[in-house]
Image (cartoon, rainbow, N blue to C red; front, side):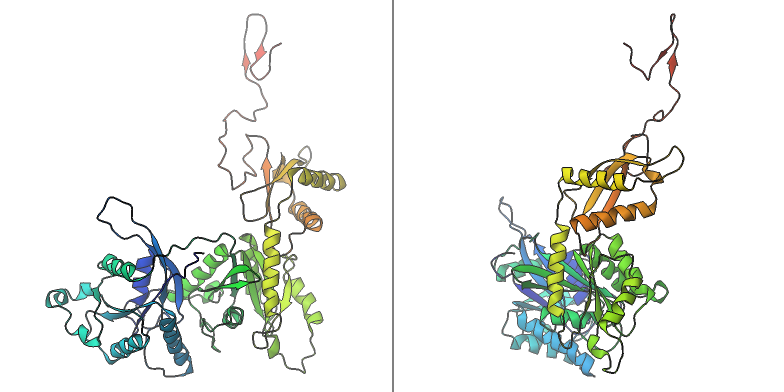
Length: 494
C-alpha cells in the first residue's frame, strides 16, 4: 500500500437518487447493486477507484487513486434496523475526506435533501453537490442552479450516469482538491471470504474480526446483499475480509437484487485465498452447506469449517464439541483436510484463532516441492500400489512436476492410458501426498496428462490445447512401394 493515506470520498443522499449508479460509473463495473427500488443499498460499500485527468500539455497525466464509499439512502429511521443504517451514513461521512451530496434533477429539493446537506456541512469536510439524472431535466442546465444553491454548497456539478455525462468534470474537480496518492497492489495480502447460508452469523463474525461495525447485523435472513470488505493488519500480515450475502438453494433464489447478491458471493470465492464456511450449530447436516464446501473445493481455495453461534446452545444441551465433531466430519468427508472450529461472535470464543488458521493455510498454499522429491514420491506410490486398469490398458505414471505460477497447489502427472485411472486411485494419491507434505486446509489439484500427442485426454487447463495429426496414433504404417523392397515411412533406414 502507499505510505500516504488514500483519500476517501463518501457518496451520500436520500434513497433512489442514483448513488450506486454513480459509484458503478466511476468504477466502470457493477460493484454495487443497482435496481429500480428505493433503499437497495443497505451497507456502506467501499471500493478502490482510479482516475487519470486530461492534460493540456504533451506530458502524460498521472493516475490518481482514492477510495469510494457508496452509502445507504438517508431517510427517517422507523425502527432499530433503519437506525443502524443511518448511523453507518454518519460514520462514513465522518471518515471521509470529501463528501458528495446527490440530489435529483427532476425532483424538487426535499426535506431529506436538506437533512443530508446539513449532515455534510457538520462534518467540516469539503462538500460537493451533484445534481444527478440531468438527462431528465435539460432545462435546468439553461436556467442555472440558483434553487440548489440554497443548500449552502458552492461547488455544484450536473451528471447523468445513464448517459455518462458530467462524470469527468466531477472527477477533475475531485483530483484538484485531494492529495496525490497512488495505491500499489500488495500481492502479499491475505484475502478471506465469509460464506454460508443466510442468517448463519457471517456479518456478526465479520464485525468481530474487523473490530468495527461496518456490516449491519440483524436478526433476520438476507441482511447483507453486497460484498462488504475491510482491510486489517494482524501480526504484520495485511488481511482483507469479505462478508458475503447468504447463498440459498437454487429454487429459493429470487430474480433481480437477490440474484446479483448470490453472484457476488461466487465472485468472492474466486477472489479469496481462504474461505470461512459458517454453519449454524443449531442447524447441522444441511445439504446446502456441503454444496458450498464443494464449490470452494472446486475453486481450489483454502477452507475452514466454522461452527457459529456456539453461545446460543442451551446449557442443558447434552451435546458437546467432541460429540458433534464426528458427525460434522462425516457430513464433510469429501474435504477431510479442512479444519473444524467452534466459534461465538458474542463471546469472542476462538475468533482470533481464525486468523491464525488462515495464515497457516496461506503458508501451506505457498509451499513448493522440488521436482526430484515429487518423483521419488511418485515412484513410492506406484511401487506400493500400482494403478489398475483394463486388459492391455493399465495406466502408467512416469513423471510429476508442480506448477510454479499457480496460486493453487497444482501438480501435473505425465503418463500413458491415464483416462483409465480410477477416481479412487486419484484420491489415494492425494491422501498420500498430504500425509507426506502437508497442505492442511487447502484444496490441491492433480492434472493427469497423456504423454502421447495424439491422445486428447488429460491436457492441463493451464496449457494451450495441443494440435493433433489426423494420422497420429495409427497402428498401421504407411507403406511406399520400391523396386527392390517395401519401405515403411514410420521406420528409419540403416
